[in-house]
Length: 127
Image 1 (spheres, helix red, strand yellow):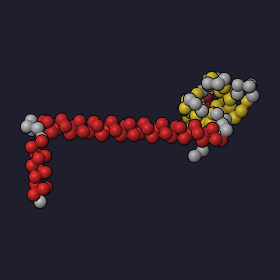
Image 2 (cartoon, one colour):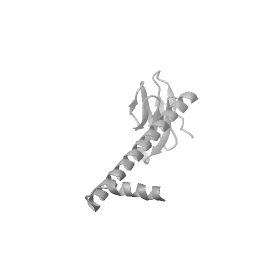
Image 3 (cartoon, one colour):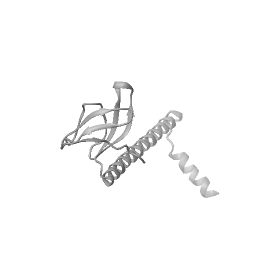
Image 4 (cartoon, helix red, strand yellow):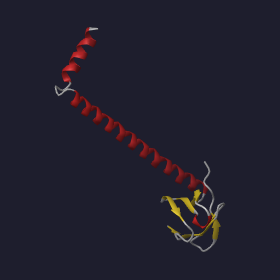
């Protein structure tokens, strides 16, 4: 018990003499550090997820795959996973790296022209 008391006294002596304002400032700094660490961890997890998606698409043999379709009517947008690029949002007529072009987006499919001129319906990404 004397060790605990001795350690407590040492901590009490280590606290600044400024009082509550200093304690609040230190608490805020600690909260800021924790928030920064959480954000870095989230960013790291997002990067790892994207790397795994790209690796999975590469293993499946696809260079471009559909992640999501949004919008309605003629205002449809597709979110695509593109190997080596990551996620991109496209509309009909948009070009993609590597010579691909989005020809049509419907509520059920995305049709693209490959660099060799052939048409393909892009596969949907499935986890």
